Length: 70
Image (tube, rainbow, N blue to C red; front, side):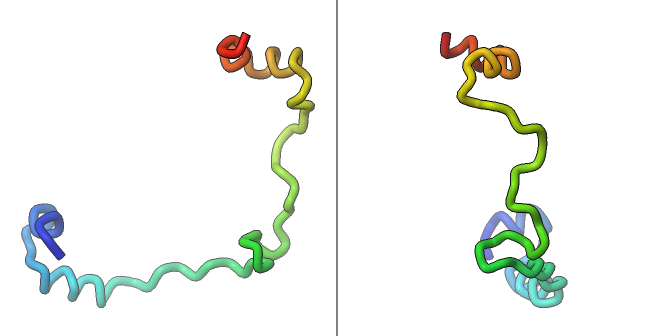
């Protein structure tokens, strides 16, 4: 494995491969619709909607960011 494992654990490469073999398998991915969205999940963004094309509303909601572009 290399120096990082040995420095961090004080163990050798053989111990690394043994630990990796006995580690729990990664958690299963949730069922998706094929596009990465979990089945049953909303495709609409969460949170309050607002008109991001409205410059006055942008200044009100994001004053520090709007100040950078004034």
